[in-house]
Amino acid sequence: FGAGLRAGEPAQPRAWWKEAFPGEPVAQADTKKLERIAVKGNRFVDGHGQPLLLRGVSIADPDKIVGQGHWNKAHFAAVKDFGATLVRIPVHPVAWRERGVVNYLALLDQAVAWCTELNMHVIIDWHSIGNLKAGLYQNPMYTTSMDETAQFWRTIARHFAGHHTVAFYELFNEPTNFNGQLGRVSWDDWKKINEDLIGIVRGYDREVVPLVAGFDWAYDLSPLRLNPVDAEGIGYVTHPYPHKRMAPFEPKWEENFGFASGSFPIIATEIGFTLGKYGMAENGAYGKAIVDYLEHRGISWVAWVFDPEWDPMLIQSYRYERTESGEFFSKAMKAPAK
Image 1 (cartoon, one colour):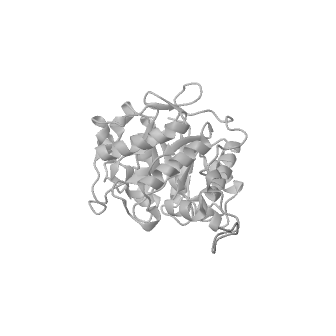
Image 2: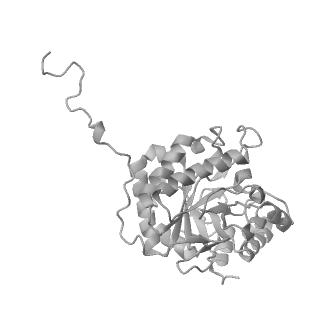
Image 3: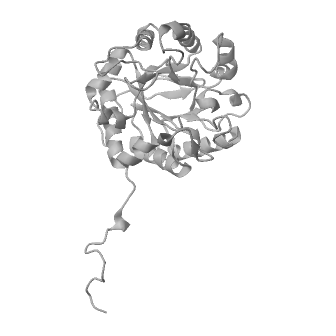
């Protein structure tokens, strides 16, 4: 046989045997500038072991903000001015795929660097809604898979291991079977899925705090009474919006998630005004009640959403004028801890 190339053979074959998965450990300075947040008993604590009450906001997906021309440090400075000490960054599966792992990680690196400079910790949130076990989701933008979800957390944990600014990994935004429309999933199923994901994270990062959401779109933590996730150093998530349960709110909150704060650290990673026109008239009583309830129990909270298009909006435009809910939550963030 001749030494020449066969017909159709590439002149320079791809060196696939040298390739590695993207997401090398982050090469940022100041990875230890902020205190590490950890778990102690039923609370999140600072580097001195003192209990923390974190107040923050969710921004929109970085891919959306970039596409609309507002991805810059000034955007995060506006979040800081709002009163936040914690920034939740929702990564939608569709955006992760379409932008590509390397390019999306570059955005997260920028966000983490800006938050470090501004003294705000970060939650990275895999922002899907649906039934991960069945592979069925509420909308196309949330479509993912067990393989993709596991690979996402493998990449993120490897990349940000040891970076104290990135305090939390919210493993899955809102698990739900949508009243049976998205198939079946039991708490035992969901518990095992999260234990497997936590195992992957812990293979790279022993310090970060993984966050596990309950059912009913991340609202209901009642299974923790009998069968908590078998993992150390984790927290739990609730999304107690006003449309979840009608007033009086507090008895249902206590039954559905509040009781768990006596045993486990909890963070309400989404709260907001979802009734009526999203203003104080329909939601003012809820706003005061939820902040008082959470803070009385040492539960940290994050308001949804620091974006002028996604509901319920905290800002009216990228000039950062606040909506009624934005005014309410900004004042609540800046108030002395109860």
